[in-house]
Image (cartoon, rainbow, N blue to C red; front, side, top):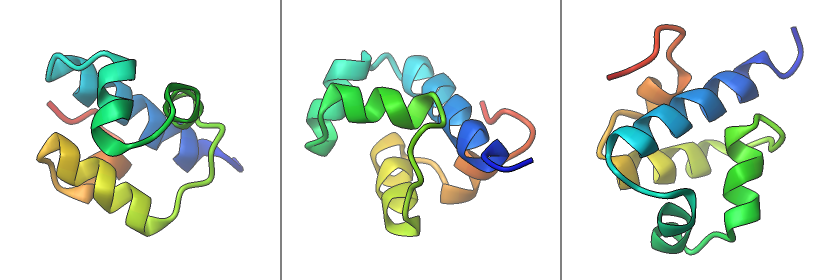
Length: 74
């Protein structure tokens, strides 16, 4: 359904961020994003560019495809 991929990326992003010990605010600061923007990404409310997906993955030290994965990445 429409928006499923955005929600999947958001959920994977949240799991990976928490697994690495970042608060939402600290991770947003690391990227130069506002916390409310990052919250919108994690809730699947933001339509991300591929470059943003790459940037998020780089900050988490994962492959960008991990953010798109159907099976939650570890």
